[in-house]
Length: 351
Image (cartoon, rainbow, N blue to C red; front, side):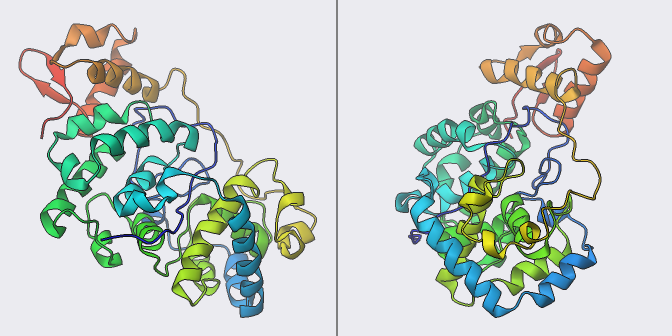
């Protein structure tokens, strides 16, 4: 199917998580964020302030936000390959997987290489899943590569190689959660869905709810608010989803927000309240050095570079502490990212 030209979102250029983390989830975002699989795994509870905002945010406010943010977007949207008409639904889907917790600058070269090698889902489906892990490189959270490969296989088997347009069919694909299904349906097919990533959640938290940061996990109240503010017209709704994400990525950022450049600064509840400080738990950054995530990344790097099975001794050389090294390797095997073979050999998965 040919997708209309509707720009998808991109993540802000924040420090990327290191590759090989043992806690990847289809939607697992960094602290305080939500991405492709975040909404599916979030609890359905939320602060009353957000619930109140959802009932008080009437049509006039929504229409004002839509008009001003979309107008701003028309003049400020970045030119990204997954936003171009020739990207199609598959290009949008690939970008959604890659942009989870990973900044645009790191995604761009891998995305372009991926689409050049596998321009359609069927092209990826023909390959062993380990090749997807190899091509994923150092984007981090490599289980996303396995899930994208699984989705490509399902698309090929169930839908003749075309990314389905129906939200329910997207949601039924392996590795696809509520966020990714809504994002692909909206950005690739111009449909009307509430698409809640960390950027949109932050914009709505500040502009409508009046708090600096949204909850760490997406709440039912946030979903109600997003649905309340969703334009009725499908094309406008799709533009609003992309525009509000871009606003959060470029202007209403987590730190050092640029209110002087914000098209809705005059309507922002958080700004009008004097920008009160965050009252929730401290927002800590992720550590990397010395963690199992670092060890996993080092082990995977050896396996990605090898074209034949790797002996245990070669893996032992990448990390000095044997207990942590064994734990990290066991985790990779359990996650399906590494296949153990007879004779103490290891390789990227073939099945």
